[in-house]
Image (cartoon, rainbow, N blue to C red; front, side):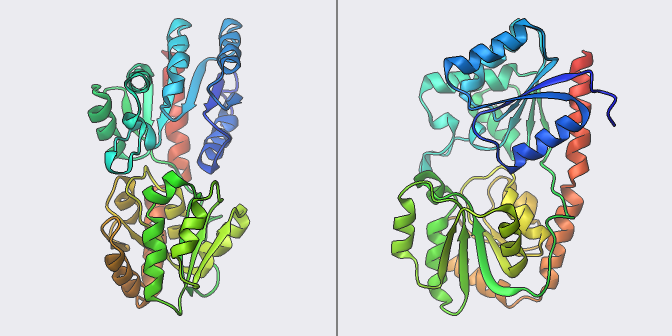
Length: 337
């Protein structure tokens, strides 16, 4: 439907767009006129938004992540009486002191600004119900403006192809913070138990933390660095197992994409990971190498039917059109008000 082209949406991203942001941008452009601004933080960024609001060029502000840097933008939205939608994805509502992760691990001033965003946005949409609980607890807000709307995935793109190989896969950018949170050390240490099985970590090497991983990795671990979506799809299609060994996630996109390609999932029980896996895979404790190795052994010996079950779960629970309908309905409702 294109009947809402008269409505104008300002899409605000804190950094260069990622796949889940790209998907939302495509949905918004299908139904609305969209202006996209990226890389929040400097004064010129806020001035651009102020000029847009002064000229009355948009009807609604749509912000990916409840980032503390967005507090001035939410203030401006209130000042100019423009409704706002904030998407909470994980770190923006998290307080995980054991790995020093989440906005609510930051200074008191940044926490106040993050709370302001979560409290005063007209609507906060979380990608997993656990994030609403964390937002209420960590920001100390009522949460009455928070709704659940998961990200959606295209099963016609993320689909299986050919025979599976004995490949164990995990995906994520490699930097000092992510290495700890996503359990990459556990992943490479578990590889030592399977010298004849290929382990692959796909993701951009952001800093020198990759050297630390390589120093503890056996020879059967491959570090690909950045790959295109097309190459990533090939890895999903070949791998029998996908590992999401994280301490904290919203709704993990790579996990859902891998499951759509019939990878058998192994993950921890934090946040959106069990929401994705359900009863289609195996669970391990965060940081437990032996548990992880045992789960991988079980998964390697499982027939491919479990991977097929994983695909069906994502197709049914997280369809792309569910997010599209939810976003469009929310925007229409706010603009009407």
